[in-house]
Image (cartoon, rainbow, N blue to C red; front, side, top):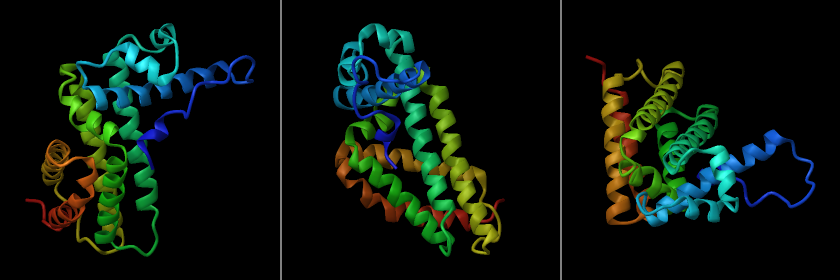
Length: 218
């Protein structure tokens, strides 16, 4: 699982390539999404320009504007696509495991996700730090991503209930608080210690999530 999985490895081949128009547009869209995360993570949201994005994506400026109306629109799409792809792959991997109890599923979830972020520091910074600099246009996107994370945790919890590891599903309000704390600690780590230290947060996140999952709803 990788944030880079949302993009393509390089530009389309020159000349006749046999790709459909839909395949070409999809390739351009994904490369631009990857490029904006890299640019924003390296330069900061305010400093990033369309020129920075198209240079990294290896597409023409006119191609950018045929896909996105602005830098803001491109970044919002990249944010949705990157996190959505990561969560889809994480859910497929973790909930599909056989012979793994709830506590182990939680631990594995955090270790996988934090390892992905640690391996891609620019994308991690773009997703957790620079989204706050993107202004009100990204508020709804952050809310949807928050809800998707909550749905993922509840899906893991439902597997735990099914397997008898949990007596009942956790309180959604406590899950909401958990996710707020996770966001805060990831952001603080990126600011203070760097992405390479993110995996050190896995035990804390695991312990907190398990405690919350075992707390009965009021």
